[in-house]
Length: 358
Image 1 (cartoon, rainbow, N blue to C red):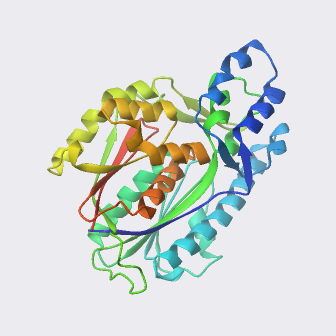
Image 2 (cartoon, one colour):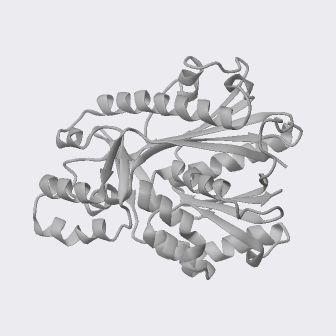
Image 3 (cartoon, helix red, strand yellow):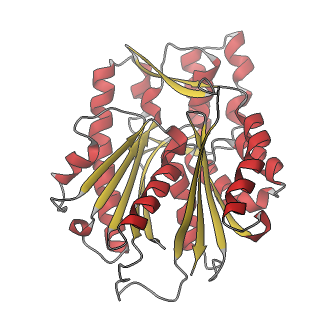
């Protein structure tokens, strides 16, 4: 089975505490009745720090979409180069050894895609297969892993690179006093990650430590729910992206996740009780609570997801790799144990990937 050899993560330079964001939001949105009513959203978000591409005072002025998207391209290339170089080193290979790259993002536009621009900055295989994935939002990271699994089942001698970059802060609209926009300023942040997955016939480099179990991807499972297009989406305007989020997301998670996961696991002749590690995308504290309630889990089983949300916020598709990295760094991952990656995104859709440490 395809083997996950390493994960690298990166953030832009501007770290902001939630207290500073609250003060900033007060000065920007004012002390009107509507904003005062929404103020508890910041305090209850379970987010302490986030990272933004521009400094906080950049948001005091309106910026045309062209300027915002140019900043997205510039920052996305820089972060992609950083995580790709680091993850190749972690995996004991060169950047030119990758056979395929999956580039995942939803928070900006670029043609050619960022992976092509990256090709002109660091050494890469001139015959590399490029598979950009756009529009899957928070589900994009798990989807990238799932598609890499599918690809490597067909090409077991190949090495796959998954890059995720999301600059959610750039979608902020300073003149938008909608509830959704205010909520977005309380939870979303920027970040990038890269993951290396080897096909089954690729030997593990001898310099890679062999005293730790390595997770393999066993199976993937994609689901799209009918009549849920408005649950989560971008609305593209002349000012840029405007996020649209439904208050029904937690209830959808609670009502659908149990059956969805049970169907996936039963197809692999497993039960939920056999899953040792739940690697879930932390869309927000309410979403994590909904996962726990829907699956009958204690919140301690989702501690890595909570820690990631607290320290980085919701970075859309990137976030699940921050969570996965915590699991890879922990010594408790023992040979034979199963893990489940899961994320939800626009569509409204679900992506699941089954892992096993060996």
